[in-house]
Amino acid sequence: DTGVSQNPRHKITKRGQNVTFRCDPISEHNRLYWYRQTLGQGPEFLTYFQNEAQLEKSRLLSDRFSAERPKGSFSTLEIQRTEQGDSAMYLCASTSRDRGHYEQYFGPGTRLTVT
Amino acid sequence: TQLLEQSPQFLSIQEGENLTVYCNSSSVFSSLQWYRQEPGEGPVLLVTVVTGGEVKKLKRLTFQFGDARKDSSLHITAAQPGDTGLYLCAGVANAGKSTFGDGTTLTVKP
Image (cartoon, rainbow over all chains, first blue to last red; front, top):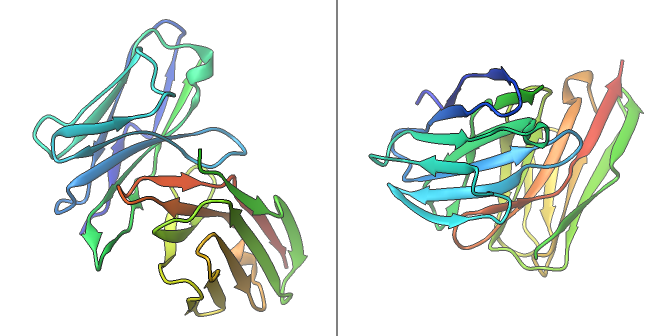
């Protein structure tokens, strides 16, 4: 079990550019979640997948954000036309329903800085 | 909207002291989880509590879930500098989606 991995760990971009982040979940986990965390706050839910299906999106996920999980394995989160307010830590988590409840395991995150 | 409030927001204590942090909500969750997060890293799951009134112990950490499954506490005995970090609670809905509090930042001074 190698855990959840995310790439890149850090991304600095200029306002208006597009960025894409990747998440590789724990292999046997069928659910994958994206969260965003800003300084001094807890993670906020963005969206989640069960296998390849995107089942829920938060109102935080504007039309500049898109997420995919094409084969039910890794996922990508793309932000188009980045804004300074997009600067945050983007966290990915995966889970399976074990013993009747879910336990999420987080990756190390991708720190995005928009200048 | 389900909200989780954590208190205190910041806590600074000396090594060897005991402490309790709290997580309160007006909503009922199917389970509640505690995480510890270090700067620049993702949260690491410490424990999941499921049953109202449940108490779980993890070495010097004791977690309690309220009878009504709306609140929880984390008690640390004889805190050590290695306990320093951000402690987050998260309420889990039936779909597995988590709602997080804003955390308690704990600093344990040697």
